[in-house]
Length: 348
Ligand code: PEP
Ligand code: MN
Image 1 (cartoon, rainbow, N blue to C red):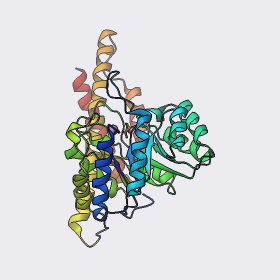
Image 2: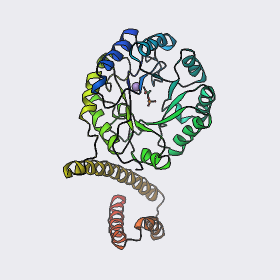
Image 3: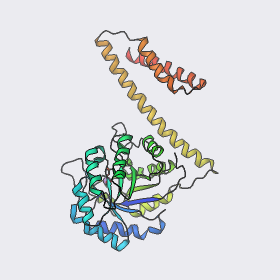
Image 4: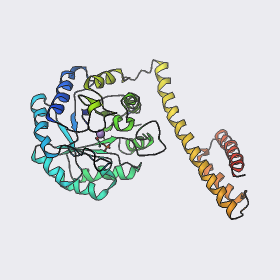
């Protein structure tokens, strides 16, 4: 990645949603108390005022009444507040209460019309915008959304990686698909790129390892859901951390490049390998289920199992990855033979 040094420049923390004045205040107060133990000053206090929920009857945020609570946080603790917006009316309300940093959530981010309307609404108002990745792993869409805000002439744009909906991901709430934020960083090395490990993990106990991987990939900081009493939260209760747990988690992250320490270097590489291997295994399983479908079609239509021309197409498709390396080409050849034998066995 272009920015390979593990630095920590941005920290965004705060509850998934504003629930009451006391909950917002207490969360902010405890973050304020811990400020000297955090790896960098709190860039923004995040808080959802309007919540995009899957279930129609779920808590959908406190709405406009929450803005005076947020103002108190800024006045008493000096925190800049950022709020999720999904419509131009949300932007208009934020501006009316002096909130000039907003984020576009993963669900809104899939809809270019909605994003453009938000970009038009923030235009000329001195706003900063955090753009979360769309729920589908579409890099162009994410980049396009970012450009819409840049074209609108906002003060600053941040990209926030929060993972992708993928029913095959079982361990985490959202699949990180790290190659997407890596590709974003390669395309736009100038852009601050943060990770939201809370929505990727979906569970408190998994937030740290996602955060460490993000830092290992050279991301510039984190957005972490932080709640005074997470178990009692009205949304995303399983994944939120108390301010104290946040501070402890951040303190335990390995932030410095430790090129002298081979154990640390190996740990990082092994984590990357583990992630790549999971993806390979997942894709192989997916390939196998397609092979089964093909077998059914062939059976139904009396088509012979082996079709050399089709297999040659598969082999040619792989050739482009041989990278002019004869040893790798030989490895791919062996791998393909094995794959073919196995697929045929499956089809019998
Ligand atoms: C959130 O940050 O609370 C949120 C709803 O995030 P996302 O859009 O990433 O799901
Ligand atoms: Mn949330």
